[in-house]
Length: 85
Image (cartoon, rainbow, N blue to C red; front, side, top):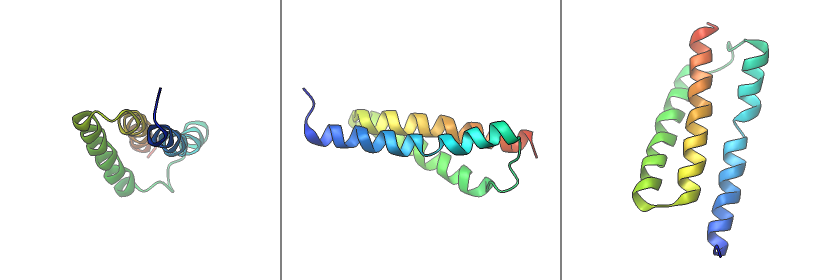
């Protein structure tokens, strides 16, 4: 059975990961990225990738899950930003 702090971590992971999805959907549907900051998403990708590496190193499931999914979404947004420029 999971302890309370792991459950809190998983819920936080779900919230932060889901928070990028509406932006990804909007970019995908509208094919518009003019209001997306390349610098912000690049830094964000770097940050969540490093959090993922940290999570793997300390074997922390919520950190691994949240940051791998957040990285994938943010990276797709960056790719779409380049594609729809």
